[in-house]
Amino acid sequence: MVIVAIFLFLLIFPVSANAGAWVQNEGEFFLSLQAYYYQTDYVFDSNGNSEKRGGTFWKKEINPYFEYGLTNRDTLVLNVFYDWLYDGQPSPSEKNQGLADIEAGWRRLLFKRNDHLVSFQVLSVIPSGYDLEDMPQLGYDRFGLEGRMLYGTNYNFMKNSGFFDISLGYRKYFGYPSDQIRSTAYIGYDIISPFQILGSYDLHFGLENGSEKEISTNILVQPNYRLLKLTLGLRYKINPQYSIVGAAYKHAWGQDTGAGGGFYGSFWCNF
Image (cartoon, rainbow, N blue to C red; front, side, top):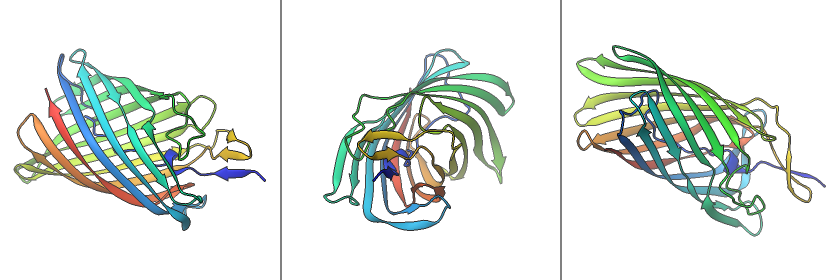
């Protein structure tokens, strides 16, 4: 009997803090250090229906994210994830931990006028050397490449300021899994100094053009998933250099992926 496995590690993507369409000034750094928690007892099936999965899955993650201004128009990006995973569905339950896929890239400012800007980002996905047979798995163990267009703007509403950012990208994996269209939108609004409310959506839309991956005898990895995640958070601006962020999120819709939700906290620093 061949088992087609839908592994939640593939389907629970982190909420990475980033500057969106904006770039860093030459010689300046941005650092976000994030602690992240996710839990679910449910999955979305191939028709988007939520159903019990037969055991609790949780993920804890530490996520350092870096940006460096190479020039006033070019920013280097590095995103690192260390995960602790637990899956209570198998008997006995399974645990794993380690360094997940690393993301490294470059963002180029293409256009800026007044409070509006457009940029382009290229991102590479680099496996960290984990073993796919260790369950739950830490990643696809496959190189990927992503191109993304980003638009950002600052605005004022009722005498308070805010920002809006939207992006659309295409992620290509070599072999399996399916390629993905990826889209994000972020909005922030200064409700009362020093607090800023944050909201976002994050969409991964698999294109069903990948092939299944056999990781051991009679076990295949499902190559396709789709997921929409909604997040609501609050940012506390300690000063212009430092901020603390707390947020909760929910997997609002999906296909062949985990339902559920969680929360995260992060520390932002510009220097």
